[in-house]
Length: 475
Image (tube, rainbow, N blue to C red; front, side, top):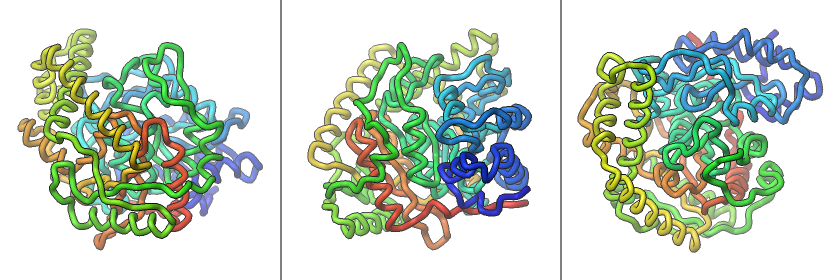
């Protein structure tokens, strides 16, 4: 059985079909698998198939907000019992997990049926999905272009209409970057809003958070309702949330004070297409009754980037050392990519003193940005500093780490800031360039204020609908 309208329906609509018995969970799953088998040879979005277990799960009595909705999991951090999580690296074995992460338990309770794992770059280190273990992921809108990273496989699967939403996580923009590259909604929730337990206590010193990429704002809001909340022992907690994000998202926002920029924090302009996307969005916000003003937080971008890199590299080095100690492997070019080895070497050289200094710098940045949001409800920026890269521009075996970091910093100049501060941010697909590529924009809100982001995103989606737009791909 085929379901012709499947690709244009979001997860909320698909779940409603199952709930009213117009279609079964098993039928939805088979539609998703058929689409995956048809598209994946061109996309390389899916790297592990779990079809048999998913078919068994689809036989269970229906329950949950997303009952029977097909779903895919990113191959980083999240554990799902019976499936491997390799972090996109040859250094990690394909041994299946013997338990679920807290978030996976909540995904299952919400009724989602996970049937595959998705492509990622090694350890999620870079803003493109072109690793050596899994190979290159292709953007549905242009197979010659990147999906962004590190949730690139998940974003490609959603943008191609295989699934309506997919697991993703974000330690420097890895939800928002691929959402921008693939024309999706990418919400990075507030630090502490979603538990990373029980295996990860403090993901990247609080820089990283789990969630998803979606096509509709209402799916993001309803999924946040389903999975938000602390677990015992979590090191962070977010401010109180509304009784329902989904209900709150339907309320019109009050007139907001929105700052915007078309320049990186070092003052250099972004690509004209990215600037045009921001200007288009700013005009749309003004037409909707919001106050728009050009402004950015004041900070030292070079020192901020260096401190952010110190934390990232230190955590990577710790992870690699742990895996080496527990498996007996020796890190080297036969099991790690060249750039990963360069990051690893940098991380090993960072002293405890320097690590603490980096945390102090980022703490000052966080307080400065918090003051900025006392004046402005939201900050509107490009998601990327230039249109999504063509495939092949990135070389996973390059070792010139400082040059690579400078290049990544110019390409992704805004998203790491919200990982530093822990504040929520959302990427939305309001603009497409002359090449037919999505050019996403990002809104950042004050710590704990996903509600304002979801309300404005809903308003923008109503003004310029995008949720039914996807790009089917076949070999």
